[in-house]
Amino acid sequence: MRTLTLIAAAALILAVPAQAKMPWVKKAQELGHAEIKDCKACHVGMAKKGGELNERGKFLEDMKAKKKAAEVDLAWLKDYKGK
Image (tube, rainbow, N blue to C red; front, side, top):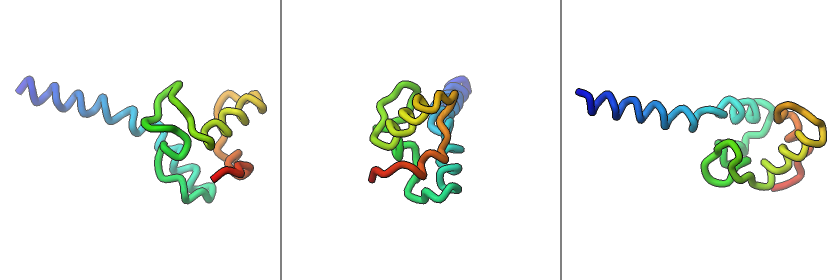
């Protein structure tokens, strides 16, 4: 019984980070970016804080710095001219 509890707890712990930014994917799609299907639209490999970003992710981080914003605004994607 204890093993089953540990397995269930581990599954929950591992599932939470994978879903942490899924609302961002949904919001990007609502803004008309149907090509964005998952976190890999902006991240290389698994998305994690401080993880490597691809071209789109770097664009959003650059915009965040340029606008001195506290958080990335997905509306900036309208200005993204990459792939």
